[in-house]
Amino acid sequence: MTKALKDGLAMTRKGGKGDGNDFLYDRTFLLWLDREDSKKWIKRGILCKIIKMLPELKYDEKGLIPAVIQEVNTGEVLMVAYMDRTALEMTLKTGYTHFWSRSRKKYWKKGETSGNLQEVKEVLYDCDEDTLLVKVIQNGSGACHTGNRTCFFRKIEDK
Image 1 (tube, rainbow, N blue to C red):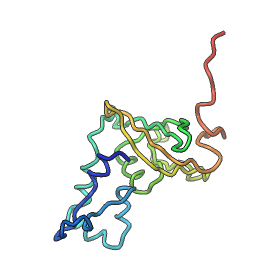
Image 2 (tube, rainbow, N blue to C red):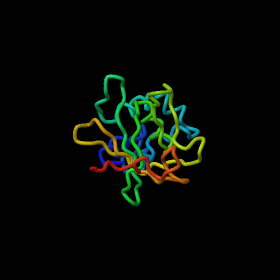
Image 3 (cartoon, rainbow, N blue to C red):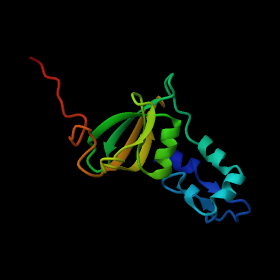
């Protein structure tokens, strides 16, 4: 995650000393909602504040933004899929990639049925704020539904 996103999610607890130990932050952003004290934070309206702190991204007319998925250790591009704001929030909350299926019209977690889960390590957005780069650790055999490691295994060649 970029520094801006990290800084944007550092929240000070009400009544804290301000010594740096009173900040609520988690590398997967909204994971703290699974904690026992989450009800207290929701009652205080903190959830809304954190979600609003996501950068102002430029979604298309259908509310989608392309997400390029890259293996964090090798730099290999694994796939491209689409997220809406909810899929991005689910990705940040769980630490695993979630997308919106344009054909099936529903959310899906990558690897949910195949076991080829993508563990999110970093989420960046481009200078135009209209594309995401999600750096992951690809688990299992690969990202492509064809069984290939990457969806980019075909080459356009001159004849």
